[in-house]
Length: 106
Image (tube, rainbow, N blue to C red):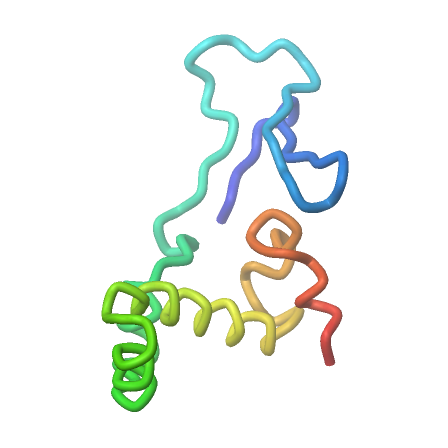
C-alpha cells in the first residue's frame, strides 16, 4: 500500500488546499511518499473497471464535447469509492484525494 516517510505529511490550513510539509530534516533523495500504481485514480482506470458508458458519453458529447469524457470517468470512480465508504481503499486518504465532505453523505 501507500508508504509515507515519518517526517512527511500532507497538511492544510483551510481543509481545501493541501501541501507537503516535512516535520523533520529529510535527506535529499529520500522517498517521502510512495503510492503504488493500483491506487492511482485515473479516468483510464475507471473505464477499465466499469466499461464505457455510452449513454453518458453521448450526452456529454452533445453538451460539452468529447474532451470532457475523462472528467466524467474520473468523477464516476470517485462517486463509486465514496459509495463504498470505509470499504474503499482510498477511505483513509479521503482528505487528500478529494474533499472529505463527500464521505459524510449517506
